[in-house]
Length: 322
Image (cartoon, rainbow, N blue to C red; front, side, top):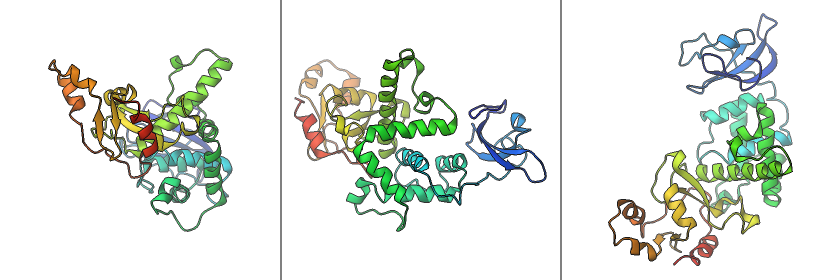
């Protein structure tokens, strides 16, 4: 158990090596994460291989997680990594108890409060929150504004870079960080690199949409992640400028996503759900699945607290539906 990502026999994952020595020894402190309860703690490098989680497995108390970089100014790379996390957690969960914030703090060598404050300050520059008059902390750093400015100009480039930097921090392949199956990619070469970049950005969009909708289908309220899809309102191939625009997305279950993609369902100007008249033709034959699909006719879309779908995009989609 030597590399980041290695897991011992008690399902404790090595997150990071540090150069900080355990008090009274010459051993370095390593940071572990329990894969069962997500508890993060320090241990010495000699016993990481046999460690049990002190929280859920009755293991011996962990060491304090080092925060050796907390007095150092945030780098551009750290801002970009924090920006990726900001786009992947639901509105209202930027606090010191959030396990993902705790994990990022451990990876960066910073205090949990420092990372939580950084994400709160990133929200100050979030266009969707600014439209609603929601503000972050009153003081921030230039890096927060700079990363939003970069994203506004080159969203796909910044999204890809955020995944690359996180993969580098975790010492893992970018495919693993972005949850991309190896079978989805061709062999090594220029084509693979191009497809990988697209898949990474699509993964960024998916996580951004699902977190905005609090991991719930905006038609049915279904909250099983494996059955949710980040649907583009205006297709990826048709509008490069809005590929990663969260206001160009909906969180749908797989069946309503298919209906939306095939122009059998649309959202009207009042954010009500509508279905194509030709679906009623199939209704002549009793079908409980079709009945369930269309039972949401006229209902209000479940809107997110931020990144509500853009009315212009919805209108463009609706014009193609009958």
